[in-house]
Image (cartoon, rainbow, N blue to C red; front, top):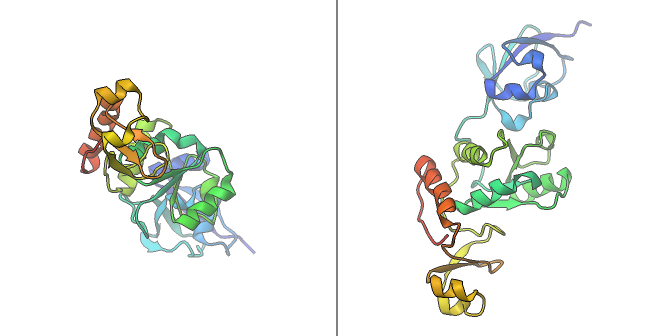
Length: 246
């Protein structure tokens, strides 16, 4: 029995996932006549987490559509901002520690696994806590257990942050989370911190915050200017929030 052939083309942002011969324009794919279109797309290297609309002859179809011979398929990327079934909460793998800290700096709920616990454990945590898995590991995004996932396209932290903020549009509440553990910050009276601060810090600063989970203490220290620049850039481009102690 002759196996059906379809024509397929990918949105520009998806072409890095497919083999070089399929990156420019339309290519022909031979199917088995039984596999779903979602399976076909994934078998070509594109994680379904990155796929938005699937069009057959200009008509939207579901991932479960079984393509017939002669169909012309256009694979689009996810819309931005991408809707989620719940509030934007993230899980980052071991390679995205800087991104995790920057998301927390903006008040975004960003859990981080360090050391590497393996793909199975990451996918299980994503599902259990309903967190979007952020990763540059393409293989991880193919795991069926994931609640949701997203490929982080750049290796540069500043570009990674812009990518996540533009894709998911999480609420930005700067200086509201602990950059070390992701816990929530609360204002802390200076007197309550006596004995926990170095003398120079205690004498030089009056406004403090404390993590409700791990007890980490924050104040506007030497690194505040560089951190505030990250916050101001994100707030200017993506949203507003109440600036608190950093």
